Image (cartoon, rainbow, N blue to C red):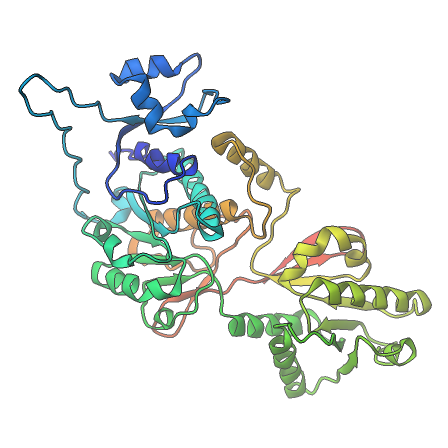
Length: 457
């Protein structure tokens, strides 16, 4: 029978309430207690044979004046303080047992996972990764309820630290490493993973050649060039027999010129006629670039809100005088940040946004995970796109379940896990003889009927 190994998962929960910036590699608590109805700080301390002061020291949030102990909260239980006898040496607590050596197939035992990310409150990187890690913890809890056993470890791998100090014998027993956040750390982790046969999930955008060489690396974010080419392919499939209109927005800070260049190259190869115009063109000349017989698919060469709002105004104004025109506006992932202030025009212009993720605040699953997050951590998720906690949940659930189901044969291919992501779908393809890259892409469609739908490929 598999033994359930989960209680120590919450050994690191106090990270989220403390101001410390470094997690010890060896657990500092002997247990974690889930608060039951009518329990008090005093009763918990008494049950475990520790003092109230020691319990509060292990859980700094208890020192806050407005702290209330709630049912379901996890409390870290410290080791008993050593008792000192007269003329005697202090009694040392029993040493923590080392991690078990790797035995057999991961499908027949607990899944061993290590998180190597900046888990601190010093800057935005740390705070974002704390939220991501909270999502990982929530995924562990959900998988535990299905009967899975998970052995989770975490290290605070800050930007200015030497990652090699974390690549220890303990880490060598892992099945999966989630991290790092910084490109400079990938070579060392990549070598360590190859030596110890460990899968590595690189969760955020990193530019590293190791992905093309090491078959154990999983890169979640596509490179900009790969994403552009992937988007162009799906653009051509989604809009056949249409008339593209590419608008120069006069935005010298934009990064989207590479996309419109790639699109124009493919249109030329397929001998598709398209129009080029400028956002500052007069209304009379501007409308001349549009087809009266075909659906017009408009593409801007800027992702920024100022240029977007100017284009929205120009296009909707044109449609007032030329209602016979059929117009679809094709956009960029960044536009989802501006949805609330532009939603009516998004629907009017049949906007399509290519993206690798979608945060849907109206989804029942989204509402449920946000509510559970508030219950567990007494806070709301950051107002960011994507939501980092949901990203962490999606990543961890997908990979832990995949390893549990397939062991070393898990490749992250479409359909392997059968997990419908809440926000961040994953679909991996191998890069030559190297690692795997997430190639998932979808279009978020704001329909003229005031619906928002996802077009998945």
